[in-house]
Length: 209
Image (cartoon, rainbow, N blue to C red):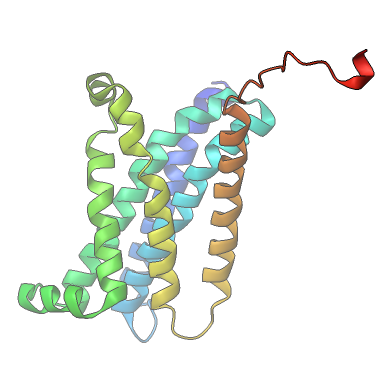
């Protein structure tokens, strides 16, 4: 089997690995003093790590010329949604014990929870429309819809930063990586943007005489 055929299943296994490791730690009672918080934080962290990797696909393709990497973007995006779902499930299960009244109060009263929930909601239409049929059906609107990934990434980073209690090294690093990825896209956008054509004046300057 060629490297190209192996790359996708290997990426799939690597994306599943964080979940397998947390399950293994759970069976071995190795989740620390606060297992619920460990699960919640791990799922949220891997959601944003894979989100940054997803946003790195286009720069990698542009800078290396490797077109095959683009085939990983959809799968990576779905794994982002998968880990966000696990993160949210961990919150409503281990933190709130499915107390929907308390969950609603928490979403309203705590801004970083509000932001995290809004990020989750915005990811839903991206996940639902990630298949080829929806791409063909929505046409130009599909690309417009999936540009939501950029505000989603910013919101997720703010949520991660906001919920950090002590060491801000990790959220700062994530914010720096995201800033670089968004700055690269801005450069691409302005390079593609057509330059206005200057109208040449019919008057000759003194040097033309």
